[in-house]
Image 1: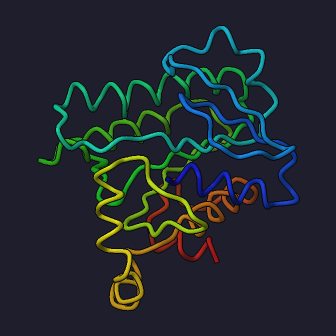
Image 2: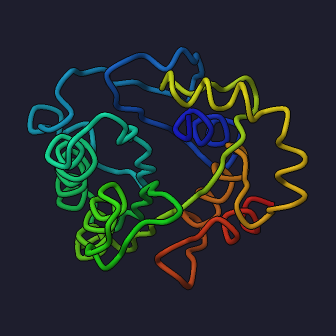
Image 3: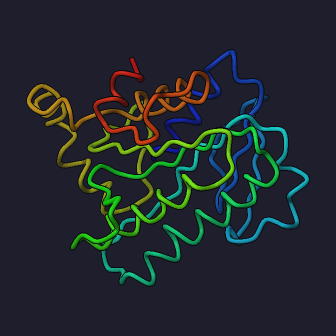
Length: 211
């Protein structure tokens, strides 16, 4: 869902010259700036390294819900897959800005009780050690989908169907914890272009940057 949001903002931004998406499924968008690579294996990139050079930023938005997963399963997708892509990109694009979509409540100590928060924290910590020009960890909280965007996770779609009508109230009562796919996408572009003083970008900062 976040990936769809930032793709929408990238294609609408006249300063963005070209966009490459990599995923298991087509994004369903037709635009002259957009090129897609569809592949089943997102752990290995040796065969397409020649197509991954020359980019200024990576917006890494792939993620899954931890519901129904044990720590080993969740680590493979959340940590191992992310680092596989990041190591390849750091090697090919040392001047790149890497932005990882994490989540509010991520545990940077890696020692808390929440499994998903520990795994996200470990992922963030290791990404920050890689030789990118800069790396930022985005931690959005509740995200309202905009522009017809929908989550591909059934659980989240059900949640948004219930909570969607409550968004104006949630936004009024808890503004620090609410954002939109548009704000997240615009914030990611802003940080890619101009940087940010903090490598960990919490939801309140995302809202500000997205304005």
